[in-house]
Structures are given as C-alpha cells and as structure tokens.
Amino acid sequence: MKIFRNRTVIGVLCILLALIICFGVTPLFSRSASEKTEIVRVTKDIKEGNEITAEMVQTVEVGAYNLPQNLMTDKKEVVGKYATADLAAGDYILSSKLSAVPAAENAYLYNLDGKKQAISVTIKSFATGLSGKLQSGDIVSVIVADYPEDGETTIPAELQYVEIISVTASTGYDANTGEAKGDEKELPSTVTFLVLPEQAKVLAELEQVAKLHLALVYRGTADGARQFIEAQDALIEELYAEPEEDPIEEGEAADPTAEMPESEVTG
Image (cartoon, rainbow, N blue to C red; front, side, top):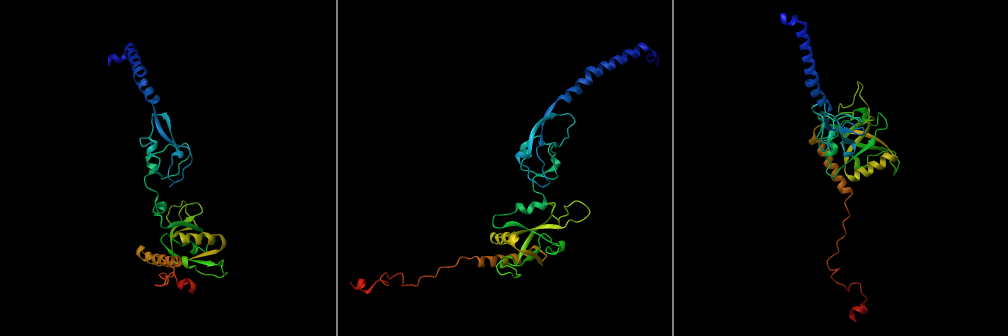
C-alpha cells in the first residue's frame, strides 16, 4: 500500500501510537500499580495444625497489583482458624492454607468433654512401645516395672485397660497417621491416652518414678474397645467410691437418755 510507503505518514502514526501509550495505557497501569489494599500477614511462625490467634497475625497495607485472588484481607476471618501448612513470619495468608476445623491428627484434642483427660507418657525404648506397632484406638495394659510401693512388676488396677488416642514421634507428628514426612517411618516417642482424672494422676506419677511397658490387649472395632473401657471405668468408680457411713440403728438416736447416768435419768 502506497500510504505506508510514505515516511511522513509512518512517522505520524508512530507518534500517535506513542502518545496513546504515554497518555492512555501508562496512566492506567500506574494507577493500578499504585492502588493499596489491606491484607493479613503472619507475625510469628505458625505450625501446621495450630489454631491461629490474634497475636500471630496483623493487618498491613500493601500494593494491590498482581495479588493472589484468595489472599485473606480480614483479620477476623483468620483468627480462630487452623493452619493447614507451616506459615513463617512475614507470609501472606491464603484461604487455601486455612481450615475451620482442626487437622484430623489433632481432632481428638477438641472432642474432650471434661469427663476424661488426654495425657502422654514417654516411650523410653523400642520394646516398651510394642516395637513401634501401637496405633490410635488400641486398648493396652500399662505394666509397671519396679512399682514404687513394693518394687514388684505389676499392672495397677487403674491401668488395666487404657485407650490410646495418639502415637507421636519426636518431631511432633503423629507417627501412625501418615502425617510424617520422609521415606522412613518415624518411631514413636510418646503415647497419649484418654483417661479419667484418677488414671491421669497415676500415670503422671509413674512417668517420673517407674519403667512403663505397654501391652496390647485389643485392636478392633470401636464397640469392642468400648467394652474394655466401660469395664475399666466401672473398676475406677469402685476403687474411688467414697465409703458409706454406717447407718445409726433405729432407737439409738431416738433415746437421748441412753448414755446418761442413772441418777440423771431418775432424778
């Protein structure tokens, strides 16, 4: 086309295009880049599964250009949620890294109703923890070597049937949930039980002064495990029942003169 062979026309078109870019596109881009918005940022490291508190996050103003669509902008919508991944100080919080419910491996800690307690004891050797084969839901007997009272090996009446709710490695990950990272399976370091307060006191004392071995009693259905726990709870109730006072025989309390001297009675 002849029009494009004319250098003057081409020069004019280039100038017009440059003006459009300078005064049309560039201001739009600059305006977008200069816009600000508030986002929620982490102020201290948060571990996966932890509940996020107000002290862990803050609202800050940042440039709005090119931010992810699922970025959290309201602190109120973050506090009280649970982290589904490790968050480092300075990280922006994405909605995909939050959960309204605790992680599955910690869910048992949020189901306590005040009647029973969760308490952990240390697995001090490979053998004492059933060679790493213990699982959540197992019913075990706690065997105490060198029992403080008599030095014998025994199973305390309070710990004949105890339910395991967690088996945890030294890294803090639950060893039997598949949560641990890496190719090699981590060996358990602690076991967490669901027990009555009376049992918790016994376990806390034995953890400090005795050697504990865990013997597997039952692994199966929840109904089957419940039978063992109900039997243990009934025994605890019997062991810690308050002694009943001997009833006063009828007639003893009704006669106030029974223990008075004869002279006072006849006088």
